[in-house]
Length: 232
Image 1 (spheres, one colour):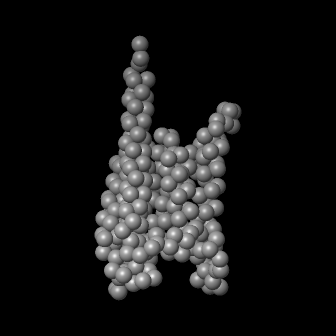
Image 2 (tube, helix red, strand yellow; image 1 turned 90 degrees about the horizontal axis):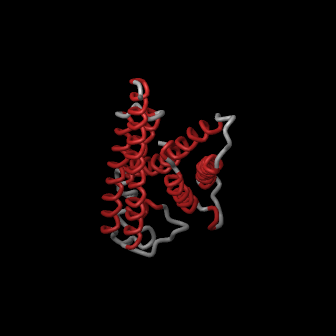
Image 3 (cartoon, one colour; image 1 turned 90 degrees about the vertical axis):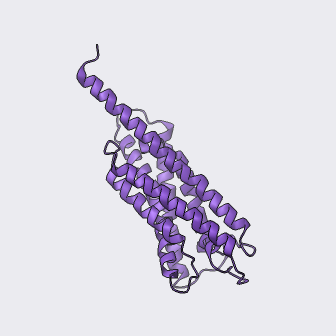
C-alpha cells in the first residue's frame, strides 16, 4: 500500500507537472501571436520594409520610415498584437507568482513582468511627437528581457543538470548549454553594436543594429521551443 507520505509526494509532483504544462502552453502561445503580428504588420506596412536597416518597431510608426506615408493599418496591427503579448506575458507572470511549486517562481514572474511592460510600451508609436521615449524604453526592455527570461530559464535548468555529476549527460543537457551560450552572446553583441553605432557609427549591412535585433529575436523564439517542462 502507498502510505500517506508517498501519496502526498505524488500529489505534489502531479501539481508541479500540471502547472509546468499550463505555463509552457501560454509561453508557446506568445510565439504565434508575435509572428502573426509582425507578419501582418509587414504586409500592410505603408512602404517596402527594409529588413536590414529598419527596426521592427518601425512597423508600428504613425508614418513609414522613408516615404513618410500614413501607416495606419500596420500601426493598429502592431498596437493590437503587442497589447495581446503584454496580456499573455502578464498572465504568465501572475501564474508564476501564484504557483510556488514552480522553481524560482518569483524570479521568473518578475522577468515576465518586464517582458509584459516592454510589449505594452512597444504599442506606442515610435514616431509619436510626445510619447516616443516610452516606445524606445519599451523596445529595449522587451527585446532584452525576452532574451533574459529565456537565458535564465535555460541557465537554471542547465545548472541543475550540470550538478548531476554522477549521471550521464543527455543530449538535452548539451542543447541547453548551446542555447544558453548563443542567447547570452547575442545579447552582449547587440548591446555592443548599439553602443558602437551611436558613438562611432557602423558601416556595412552585416553590422546594422536592426539586423542583429531580428537575429536575436529569431533565436529567442527558437529558445522558447527548446524549453522543456523542467525549464518552467
